[in-house]
Image: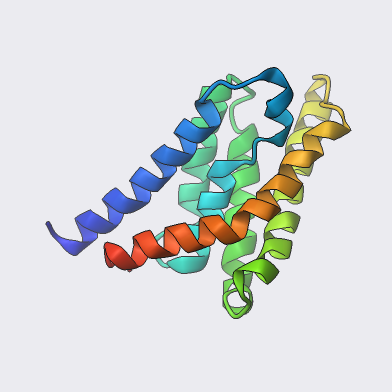
Length: 161
């Protein structure tokens, strides 16, 4: 298999896994603790190979999330595009830090994502979630170091560059 085809397959498979993780039903009380897997995977690939995964991929997965959730078309696309843009602007600085320090950067990006979605919901008059929705951001920050290590091993094993 050609390296470029393998690269695309590995990246696509990681996004598919993220979509599966957010689609798996669970108890209602656990929904507030579910991290935004798609954003975490997008942040990882923007940090790891910014020449391949960028704003366009962020916009695409955001549109797919809009369709999956049945939300206003473009709501998640805007949020993921901004996350990808900010990650690409700061990736050289963030890559220097160990994963546990990168988690604070991820926390800020996930908070920006949540604020954009809440802002759009407020503009169109939809009711916004309670403060418990913000716990998923903290869970995403805690999960980041392990996700980083797993995706890095996958990237190195399949020689994704």
